[in-house]
Amino acid sequence: MRTDGVAVARQRSPLPTVGWLELHLGTRVEISCRAEQRNAGEAAVQDAFAEIQNIHQLMSFHLPDSDVSRLNRRAAREVVTVDPRTVKVVRAACELSRQSQGHFDCTTAAELVGDGHLPRPVSCDAPDPNASWQDIEVLSDDTVSFRRPLWLDLGGIAKGFAVDRALHRCLAGEVKACLVNAGGDCRVSDALTASVTLDVPGQRNDQAATIQLSGGSLASSCAGPGDGMRESAKAGPHYDGRRRRPLNKSIFATVLSEDCMIADALTKVVLCLGDEAAPILARWRATAFLFNADSGWKQLPAPRSAWRKAHG
Image (cartoon, rainbow, N blue to C red; front, side, top):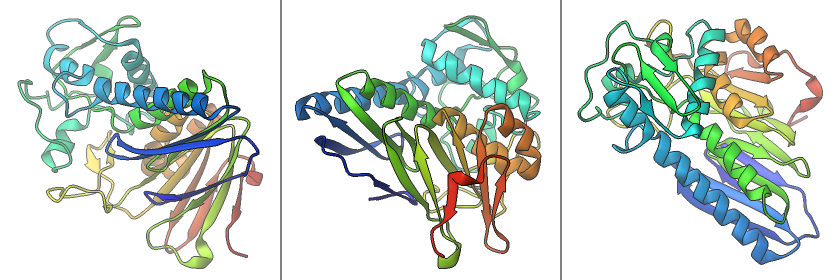
């Protein structure tokens, strides 16, 4: 099975396997599980997909009734009550922004709109050009406000969170093992090992690599323009939040972490900072692998046993 640049092969099991593929979060999402009874597995997968849809409806920049859209319209004027799941993601985004000194910043939506990656939001005040993640105030587990007008976009972290939530929902039933793969953001349960092949644009066959993933998460991002870009886009989809500029270098980053939400966000930190991201990775007990066509693969600190070359 190949999904958006990442190939995943799972171990065989005597337990019945249930697997569905649906479109969510702007990509293809696969959820597979093993259960003693097939109907129990099907019910668990349905619950997991329902949770992914819930996360999309809460955190979409595009949907006018999402928590993100309501925050962008109102949070600079008043305290806004949102879902606790939204608050959890906003808190994590702000913490990663703090640790990366703003290179990861969930308030670059104005630049993303200007460069054609996102549609202009309706009925929102123009963002203050000096606004940043530091203007976000998380007041409680369900309330947020902004110190000045800004456009929040959780696209760099919410997909990973949706993967985490889907796996937890699936395992809440009579499920023995589960895998969730959302366009290359992947998480597997403790009872499962997945062999993930990193299919990177521009790499030679002898540069291909695989990662053995068990009881953890993996996410990948490419700094340069990709196949999934909107036709109107002027540059790649990932931005250095501190410089407010797109990353136009052709670097591919994969991060391994316990939680997919953290892995998803850390890929952008690694793309911005390169080797300087090592202390941040260490705080989250994460591993990063960077690729460029000239020098091949580089690993930022963590056990080398987690990966091997796919060829040779």
